[in-house]
Length: 71
Image (cartoon, rainbow, N blue to C red; front, side, top):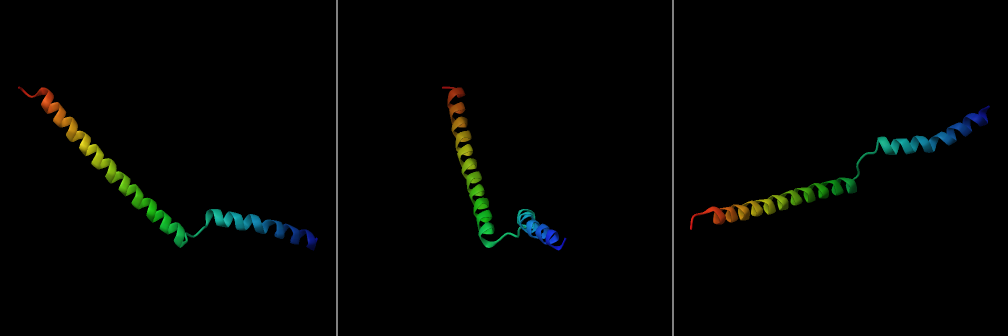
């Protein structure tokens, strides 16, 4: 009976460790740095899209003004 309990515990340890790393993982410095880099990259992309869309709106406004302005 003791061997069965020990075999069960030995078989359950990898499952316990796997579940602990999946659900209760603490962020380390590398993942925090990666998260910060991704956040800054997203902000840079949003700024770039904002600048491009502003330029497109200005260009369309100038085009509309020259199209409908009286000669």
